[in-house]
Amino acid sequence: MSDPMSLAAAGTSGLAVIFAAGAHLRLRRLRKACSLLQGDAEHTSFIVAVSRQTAEIERLRAEVARLHREFDQFRVALDESIRRVAVLRYDAFGEMGGRLSWSVALLDDHADGVVLTALVNRSESRCYVKTMRRGVPDIRLSPEEIQVVDAALRPGTRNGSVRIPSPTKAPVYTDR
Image (cartoon, rainbow, N blue to C red):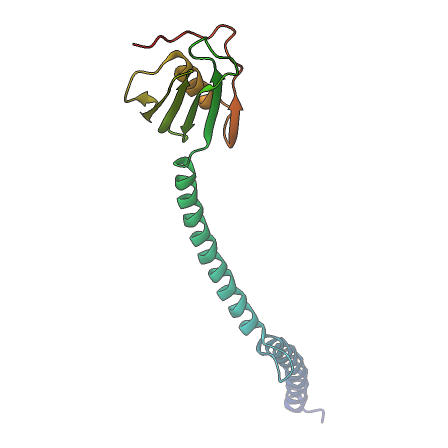
């Protein structure tokens, strides 16, 4: 076996065996990694699990987008609801005590709404309704109505009502 060809063939064969063993080990590792990705009878494959999670994330994104649109609709509806309320009680005619006359402003965040006023004296009562559009009344407001509208639109009066202290000296209305 001292023949150089035999030695070369034996060396080449030895190297081939070493490379084959290395390739076999790499193939085993690759098969193990693939089995983790593909799963087996008792485990879900990694690819299927990732696919499920991706589908769930897409479903959640669509749900969040739907909720965002719905929230925007509620915000618009809320801006148009009556949330700014103020009440003022006073003696309109000076002849009766008890502050039986009153003005109420019922407005939304755009200053749209109504101002209600009841003027009460001994013999009669008068009620007035004045509409507001963007803070502008359809009929001129009385000083008390202006006061109640200002109070309703004042920052911090949302989601509730504000009671305005009566003026110390209420104007006296005369019957005409």
